Image (cartoon, rainbow, N blue to C red; front, side):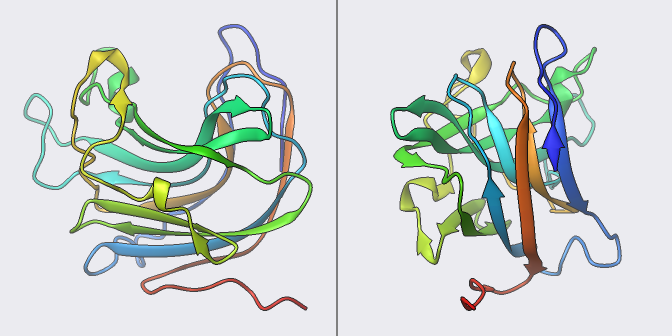
Length: 207
């Protein structure tokens, strides 16, 4: 998949494959595991927020002005360093961006300092979204990036929101691909061996 260059006010771009079969999601217990192999040709060298995996749905037991709202768990990155673009966990409530808002102001983050997304090579990534624990975890080539384990609150949120709890939604959609939210160059990403399940999956055996 390839996304075009984006700039100015028209800077959102997305090339995501969404698994959203209502016969399969949400799963009983609301704990979702997933895996994909990806090959990213290049990563942003500017302060672009990007996503490669997400999970979204309606937040149980919560409301915004009397109505249910949607939340998204995301894994991607931001804040480039000399060795590449750093990984980041992100929590967002898309309804905050509508007029009038239909969700609380969040857009919260937790950075994995110094851990960057690989480019120019096939890489295996795995995730776990655990609704009852309000927890998200991330592995790369079989090793967990512990700095990306999130439960509770992250390092901060936009709009001066403090200590916002990352309450998990009932995951009704899981996405894989490339998405970014600021001005950026074209991006090409190849994905393969995508699996979604209710138990840890593991990486493919090298051929």
